[in-house]
Image (cartoon, rainbow, N blue to C red; front, top):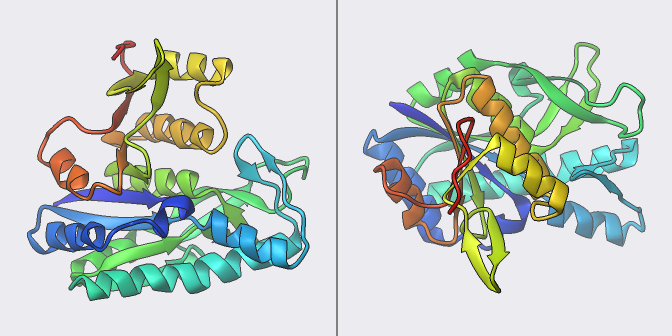
Length: 266
């Protein structure tokens, strides 16, 4: 079966309709694909930090992570959010296992920035593929919180897009970023358009010009990195339209496909 890694951002989690989870479960039960969900949790982390009067800053879409922020991020993502996604899949008729990247050394991590400017922000150095394969063989859907750990036991906050990219690379699967927009969008002649296909050259130009900004930057960079590391395909689709996932897996044109080939305009 095709392995499909679904990265669901924190901003879209609360908006996802029940039919999204039903679609994921139906695809699993019909042996169309083996889905794995990697989720974020930015908005809920922000809420807890605000209530605690803790300031939080970002550098190119990555949250600068102090020990205090790391504690909150782990509590929110590996706790409430992870288990809510598992619950939603259960309600949709599926079986899921919620995991932190710490569990079973699922996501081994190293610091992103050796200078320490980003704090405890990590990148995935190794994925425990056998653990995920074991879970999927039991008919269950892995749900991953992007907290990793190094050999010394230090935990790291890993950008969810980067974590999903690493998992997809390790499993040689398809990588799908589930968003609350139809794909990478741009205003052309006063009208919003969705780029159906983007290659590396054009993505870099769009980042430089500000068309792609904020949290979309690590998303498209992760998509490109995944392709170079062996991911079959990288896609950005709209999770608020649950049929988009099924349409994509059936070979229909939805969302934005990230490629390493020549630039193609809309």
